[in-house]
Length: 429
Image 1 (cartoon, rainbow, N blue to C red):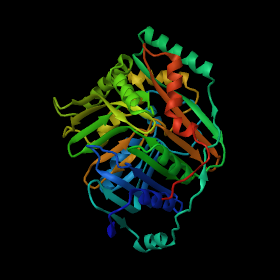
Image 2: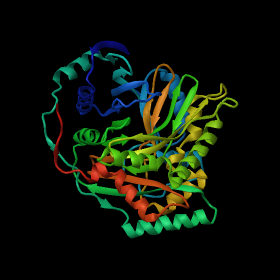
Image 3: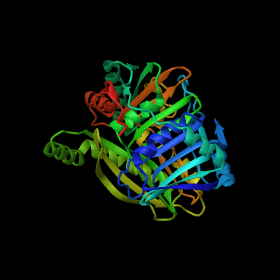
Image 4: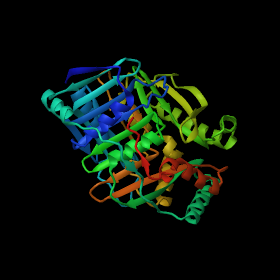
């Protein structure tokens, strides 16, 4: 892959729009969008990859296949890890219906790549097939202003069913079987959708640091995630689990008071520290001796719809292990399972009524430096164009201090950017 041309003083919104529209012309494409959030560990403002030079798609032996693929490619690759990889890692079974066509794991080396590195005043196009890229860019017409709204969703659980299941999980905590579990509910719609417009709308409404648009043939991920699963920077690994959510307020004084209350909320701190401990344990399995550190505990971060309690855990990767080993030993991320992890996943399978698939998994990149960055697929929509099926899953941590009614309200708060959507014009300015 060689550099084709540079873009001086790139415009973030323009590159995002261009990337989404260019995705229409490829069977496989991905946009990873930082939305210019301040991130001390962030390496790229925006990455867009199109077309397949070579790829892997596997439903078994996934991490070994990824290890081999990385040794073969060594350069850029992009893709996903599904939550269903848990069945390979532990003696677990996903018994609910598979509704979408995402394999357990898939990564691809792209034909064409747009790279905008953080802190640089230019972006650059790279390509294996320069003529194809030039032709597609020359033919590309960005859409004019158009209206968009999400369709109505149907809940898989009634409010009463949700409350009953949360209380059943609290009984498991009372009996000492678990300390915490991430319990989710699903909302779906059988509707035709323009996934490209849906991403642009959601990203305008809820701009997040780990936003992603991912296309795998007829399957789409429309992602507004605030959470990093794991990044590698040189020898350092960084995980940033989120546990703790509070609403935003219009008035600045009230908004600040909500932030302070979130940081000092015992329930939210309890949720967060349990997952921090779990993440420390996961990282310790591949870490150099005495290198696991909690860089930040209970940091409050503000996003368009919510405030979040985020902690940062880091380690130095031992020479005995590869980057893929580090991912494998920490997956699925503790913030989306609970503790102890295996028992929590068993109870998730028992009490949730839909298969998570790519939700609670991860999308991201590996770069030629040997670094990677993987998000947590939350605040996201899965869409099958073939089935005209749209799925939204939201959840939260259940602990002994949880109140079922509050947890239900928190789920709706996390989906606010979608549930509050009314017909609106996409901003083309």
